[in-house]
Amino acid sequence: MNKNKIIYSINIEDVQNVAEEELERKLTAKELKLVEDKIGDCIKWYEAILNAIYALNIKP
View 1: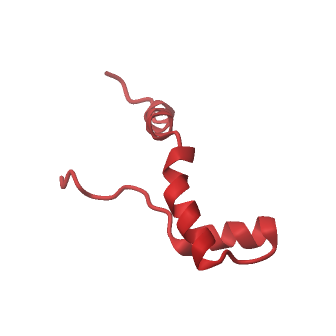
View 2 (view 1 turned 30 degrees about the horizontal axis):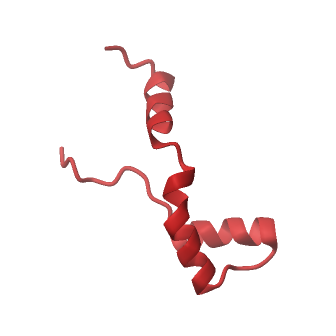
């Protein structure tokens, strides 16, 4: 298996859909860049991966 394969990603459309739902408008290019720079800090990657493993009852 390719160890560099992307398992999950978030694209501009995903971000804009949330902005339209929550803010009732699209983000500007400047705002999108700020979100892009910050979003990785907001996602608890380790916990997300571990929760997915546990949800599938994968054992050691």
